[in-house]
Each structure stands twice: as structure tokens, then as C-alpha cells.
Length: 364
Ligand code: NAI
Ligand code: MG
Image (cartoon, rainbow, N blue to C red; front, side, top):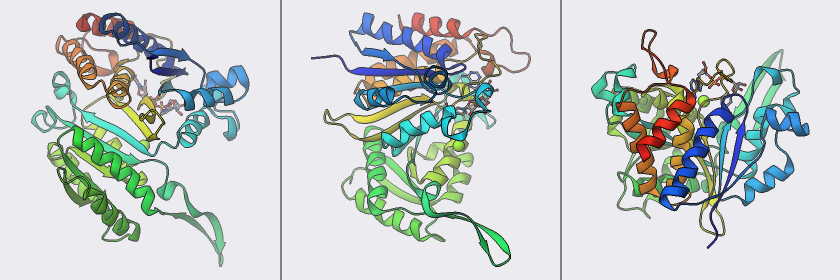
């Protein structure tokens, strides 16, 4: 059997810095756990623009399609602000998501015990929190037609359209039910069926798909009530599935329940490929952080946790993913902190490489 392939796109700013730590972790799994990947690396974002005049070369796009999973760092930076919209670094990432048709965006909100004090919420509200938001990523109001700014009478009118087909709802619902089956078997679907027809259809289709998953306890909630419940008592949830717009807001809200941008991974999944694995892109939620780039200050954990998600969702290595997460928990419990995880008078932070090395040591 050939090794599964992993395409690494470090990108810009702190992207290459945090990805260097992930490379160490990947090597560790090869050497110590016999888990080998065919790893190749390519350019995306500003780095690709500098080399090729485009934020994503066609060859890179083809390699992403062929890879078993893609792991991306971050794109963008002030240097590229002057570029035309069509070649901005972010366009490279958008093209990957669109052409790979990554309709299911997984954003965990997970609280490491050692960081429970770091949350803006009370410790007992977030300690032990482990929920997953599934956001529909390729349809809805960000894509629906008609859209635009038009003249109507003697004033302008701005129009966007919330539009979901049955199949678009069904495929993201199915991915959320599959996820719930591997977790706590609880799924809450959020929409605004009280005021939106697309929400009524959403609720109907999720309910229909749910008949294939009798073991999963399905509930429905209006998205505004969901926002309240997420801050009041987030531990009532396991998996949440919602549309593109509500998911954008709710996943950011849920993410911040637990602390720093430097801790947050994500996965974007598409339809299964011939080998049964979903098309998949894993990336930290944060951007290229130009304010700290090149200084060895970046927290590599978000990117390392993104690789843990790849182990779990692309390579069926849930136990190895848990091993990696436990190593991170150990290092945090030992008190190691990158600068982003410290208050104003928090002591001496550890560097990007220092954090990566400590996680390796904990793995050993
Ligand atoms: P950002 O996420 O890059 O940074 C926001 C703040 O969080 C900064 O103060 C940064 O230092 C800090 N931060 C982020 N990641 C960190 C980490 N791993 N460790 C420690 N601190 C961290 O968002 P910002 O500043 O709005 O955008 C900067 C650039 O990144 C822009 O060009 C933007 O377009 C791009 N961007 C790219 C994304 C992506 O590649 N997926 C997502 C968000 C922004
Ligand atoms: Mg957002």
C-alpha cells in the first residue's frame, strides 16, 4: 500500500513558521508510530503571487485535487494590499475551497483545562467544553442570486438572496449526522424557520436526513436563541449544524468561548473521493498575523490541532489524533505558554519552536 498523500501549503506571514512545527510532528508520527505520509509542499497566497503572479497556480490546484488532504497555514499580508482583487492572496484560498467544493466546514470549540481561566466566561461554564459547529460553506446568502446594488425609484437598494436547494442542505446535514455518530450522538440544527422559508426547508430536510440516523438525538433551535444558549450553557451541545451566514457568526462566537485565536483549528470537507476519503482542507482559523510574523512568537497549536483533525477525519486515526491532543494538554498543564496565551504580566513566553519541541517531548 502506498502512503496517503498530504499537500502542505504554508502560505504567508506566520504560516511557514507554524507549519515548520507541524512538519516536526508529522515526522514524529512517521518515526515513532509508523504513520507515514507522502508529504509535498507548494506555494499559496502572496508567496505564490511573488513566484508566479497568481495566488494559486493551476499546477498547485491540480495537486490539491489529487492529494488525500491539504494542510494550509495562512495567507495575506500588508505587502499585498495594493494588489488587484483578482490576484489577492485570499483568492488563492477561496479558489481551493470552491474548486474542491468543500461544503462542510468543521469548527471545534474545545477547552483545554489548563486554559479554562483564560476564557471570558466563568471557568465552570467552559471547563471540559468540547463542541463542534458544522457550517455550510458553499451556498446560502453569500452566493445566492440575485445580488447587487440597484437603482429603485430615486434611491439605491442592496440585495442578497438566501437560497438553498434540498441537496445542498441534505449533504451538509449528512456530514453533521456522520460526525455526531462518531461523537456524542447529539445534533442541534439552527436556522430561522420562524421568519425564513429557507429555514423551513432547512428544518424539513435535516429532519428527513435524520431518519437515516435514529441513534442521533436531533433537536432544532432558532439561530438567535442558539447564540444565547451558546454563551449561557455551551456544554448542552455536541454537534451543531447551520447555514453559511449563521455559521459564520456562531462559529466565531463558539470559538471565542475558549480563548485565543492561536488555539483554533478547522476542517473543510467535500464529497468522498474514489478512495472513500472526503476532499479535505485543514487550516488554523487565524490569519497570517503580520504584526508578529518573523519573530518566533506565533502559537503553532492551531495548526498542529488542524493536523490532528486531518488524522481523525481524513485518515481514520482518531486514537493518534487523541494522542496528539493529549500531548498538547500536557504541555499546557505544565504551564508552557506562547505570548498570545498570557496576560499582560504573565511571565516569560515560549517561542513557536519552543512550543513545538515541548509537544514533541510530551509525545515521546
Ligand atoms: P490574524 O488572525 O492574522 O491576526 C489577528 C490577531 O491575532 C493578531 O494580533 C495576531 O498577532 C494574533 N494571532 C493570530 N494568529 C496567532 C497565532 N497563531 N499565535 C499568536 N497570535 C496570533 O488576522 P488579521 O490581523 O485580521 O489579518 C492579517 C492577515 O491575514 C490579513 O492579510 C488577512 O486578510 C489574513 N487572513 C487570512 C486568513 C486565512 O489565511 N485563512 C484568515 C484571516 C485573515
Ligand atoms: Mg467569520
